[in-house]
Amino acid sequence: MAFLPMTKLIVKNLFTRPVTERYPFVPKKYYPGTRGKVLIEVEKCIFCGICQRRCPTAAIGVSKEKKSWDIERMRCISCNLCVEVCPKKCLALDVKYSAAAGGLQKEEFHA
Amino acid sequence: MSGRTIIPFGPQHPVLPEPIHLDLVVEDEKVIEAIPRIGFIHRGLERLVEKKDFIDFVYVAERICGICSFIHGMTYCLAVEEVMKIEVPARAQYLRIVWSELSRIHSHLLWLGLTADAFGFESLFMQSWRLRELILDIIEETTGGRVIFGSAKVGGVRRDISAEKMQEIVKKLRSYQKEMDDIGKVFLGDLTVQHRLRGVGVLSTASAKALGAVGPMLRASGVSSDIRMMGYSSYGTLDFAPIVEQDADCYARCKVRIRELDQSVGLIESAASKMIDGPIDVKVTGTPNGEFFARSEQPRGEVIYYAKGNGTKFLQRMRVRTPTFANITPLLETLKGCQLADVPVIVLTIDPCISCAER
Image (tube, rainbow over all chains, first blue to last red; front, side, top):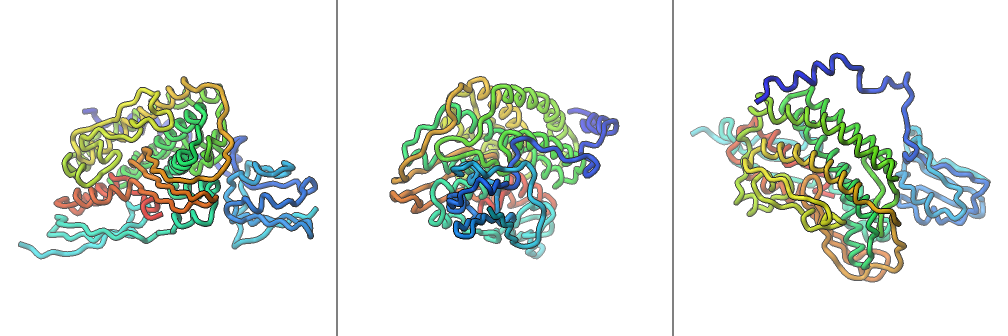
């Protein structure tokens, strides 16, 4: 049986920098593939409504008459399905998450 | 003879990450019986299968559990693919192994941290979770999510890992393996840790079999059983033997999980070496018609998915039997006769995931 096996870890810990990042002085690093919030290039959108129909959490709303596209950020689960099914490829996932918000608020985009 | 008292344990208790209630019947400090009550966080996810089409339901299946999310999604896919007779490409199968084993490593490190916290070893808890964070970084880099991978889909996987990235991951994991060994040595060699784990919560081989224990709980009782032996998703092509311990106490369960960390790194290495170029998914056409039981090995044990389709895009029935649910009965057996102070540690050694069990 080892004698005080934790000693090695503790001594190493004493002479190394903190493992946690000094946020907000050091900005958070994102990976290129991180699934954050949904972005839309609304000029390219044809308002076909496929993203609305396929969204698993019904976060997206599309109106062809009003030429508007809206999303409830707090409902979105960043699953990437809308990006995959979009025929015009006008949707994309940002690496950053959406900002915290109170309640379900719609963010609207108009062409 | 002293009188009996009932001590309520949970649903809110410092060692419990999730709510389960146990009525502990104690005589002095000795537990005579434990009466469980679950159902605090039932969400009715199985019923949701009638409202979500079978392709979108993967997202729901993944959210049954926040720790073994990928394996939940994958097992659901296995069930639907078998019903629809879909042949998943070899590359996708190996990618599924890589992500399954990564989620096993991160789940076991999470468990080690929680256990260290339960027996009051704060710095060991922090060290375990520090390592877990490194694994979560690999997961985020390859799938885009930290705990909800979102990379399993019916017919394959959503994302690919390039050969260079795979080499980098294997290299990283090898260096983390040394750090995991350091932590493992503390768990298995430290006197104070042994004092809390050795001889506590013994579950004999016979009762483990009779009560239907699964996963590390079963393997620590000397039963060589692991669903990965059935060879689902190309596990059959890898060199694999279940890790078995004979002592059947909390220490043995801890040892099984620590040894599984090494094994998982080995499995990722061999899956990476066997990965061949090719497609990562096949196009899914038609709707499921038929039924199937899919089984797979989660970090906590065997999970069973039953899927029944009726030819429409909505499944008729979906049923999940999670490992925690199977392990609750053996837990009650191990609690009999233990000291009241040992209850938190014993409850943690089944690795309770209550939101899994209640869905």
